[in-house]
Length: 578
Image: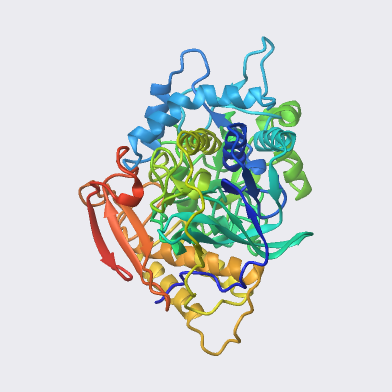
């Protein structure tokens, strides 16, 4: 089916000039902005809600880095590669783990206050997939909130211009196809109201994840895949979108709960909590014997085990038992989780916590090189929006904040190390869009289709049905035309990302990492130790999705992405089938 190459929107009624436009205000976006501004570049931050409303402040676990006695980046590398199930780019992971300790220290230098032991050393804990205690945390289980606080304070102290309540719409390019800025829609921002533009030769996408494409997610409401959708419409490559990590332990709120679900951090299992299938004292620890790390196995293994056990018992949730922690440890180590559980009528001090998997983290995203460059000149991506090659088929716990931190620094270095092009050629507007906008109420329909057909359990039948249902939503001739606006633009982004995700998941006929095909339960290295790369064609009437494969995640370091490189690719037009 045809897919949009631009969002229908009025022409920009106002504009700002900058050298760097950063879209997003989590750890990745704010770090890029601070580094670029410190280098003297005119930097503007565009954020969808308030400056601290992204996914970063919801992160509970912490930041992984080889900071403890006896730990090394090489050990961190090994754990990350194992979790990625053969699809990590080793050069990207090496950069991540090698630069991790200094990146955390710089964050502390900006004012982030991490928990410490009595001797003043960082208090490090352990999470799933890690063989060492290497997770630095703050406020017990409020690491993201503390990191966000410190970075927001630094941004405000630096006087960096910020446009809040702004939904990024589409990329602007000059006559040569180079990035020239981004269009956005602002609600209630005074002098910046309605559709406008930030004109800049460098645009950094740091818009977070796409969890809201599913009915139940740990992601906030703003995580609607905007950066990935914008990049696709701009002609950038998107890789590995089928690998969506479902967090094994979100707080189960009932069979009809939708939207953002409270997260019960993996750190709870890291401190000794265990999973059982009943709450009456007769429950079985069903992870024992399934992996050497039991409850601390990588997230895909734990989520699969939970889902499989739920199916076996006909149950809609399992239980996380941490009663043995005692009241003092719960209050000291996990105050945020304790409060969230009690707010929903569960006291983890005296009873097991009902849990179920929920969409959590996208390991794929906008394909970048080791400096965050995409295949569109001047367009960069970092954080969860990007596919740097670090995560492969499954993210290792607490590598996400770290990735945002490290690769944001690499982007800033790339941008500041050479002169930026100046606006010379006239800026061209995005091409005319194709298919009509979906109404806002279609958002729920998209989410239910995705949960039913492309959730933890997938098959050719379920994915094909999801594709048909998504196409039917877009091709419904009986519905009234939807008016352009924030709700309809968000729904369009979700639909586009969902359609690409389903296509990739249907094409990958194996089980690997967090992609679990019931009809292809085994990993197939001979055929599928490679990446699926999606692009949209440039037909203004509605682009066809093109899906290809490549054996490498990052671009060759000596070749700019816009000029290609010696990548080995097999291309498939349209909606590929197995």
